[in-house]
Length: 214
Length: 268
Image (cartoon, rainbow over all chains, first blue to last red; front, side, top):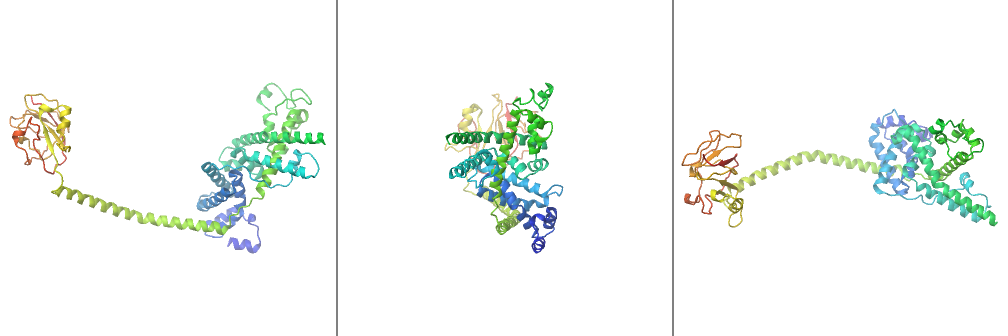
């Protein structure tokens, strides 16, 4: 079947065409859905987590998303991408759970390495324990600020900048016009800048003060 | 570029030449920031070279987006779903089995519900018939209200037995010496107007007929259209107690049947 074929050929899951897999599943191939599950499990998890910000809840939502996908796969129209369809179900389920439980947690302990972007904020004070501490604190503040943004703003930033979906695809996922996607992107960027600017200014001021003292 | 800027004839290069601070990045330029190269296009690139304020604002946007991508991207990139296929499959099979059970319950539930409803209906009919034939069942009471006591208080008083039991039917009659404006009553189909010596006129209002007949001196006149079946009336009170004594005129032991509603009015 599809899985055995993929396994025997050493094929990456992502290399298999979604429409072929869907047709195989609907045609009675029991392993085709497993391939789809493995292919989109992590992507859906990331998307759901970016909305609900709760690991346990994200796991539950991912399971429900795939249960829904399995149950309604016969309704999937082949005129759109399977990925878009799955994203749409995932976003709807995540928002539904978020609204139902009102579970809204800030991003917990973001494990990050130093990045060029954060390095922009912290000027060089040497590779000292103090610098590492500063960067850790800064990342935590930034992570909390991002987590405190409105879910729909963070969602659209994620879809556009992280998942790199084009505006047309985002419009299909969110079931809104393309113009609304663009305006939401604009306001989400404004909101992001608004929440991050105070952190930048504070860090820059603290860094300058340290330079003066040094 | 904002509409008001275009109307004012301002160019994308800014209002006051190089290094001027317009203080407001045009809306179109902000929309062009969907991608980093968006601001490199003309005329926004020229504007940013000249306008320090817009350059700073664009840099702020670019920085915040870069930080967002770095923080959020790294935070999400390491997040993989811990949901194994086997676990999902187990949940799926449990759910499908539950759905099959629910469907089978629904399939059997229809005839079961129909059977239960039939049994209940038969039991209800049997119980009703048993109640009707049960000698120990409480007697149903019909009272005739004399015309002297037709006020509401009297009606209330007369509809109650001394022990407080309410009459099942209330009949009102009036004699020819009085004009009575009529109260709605229900006549049982065993109604025997001849047993009542009141000289009144019966008017059938149930079917809209307003024609009235003068009652004979010995009893009630029943309109021809009124299909009342006359049967012997099981009286338990003497006819002498008929009016004005504060006693029920007659008592029906059982078997009152619903009939059409009529009202009495005083005879002409």
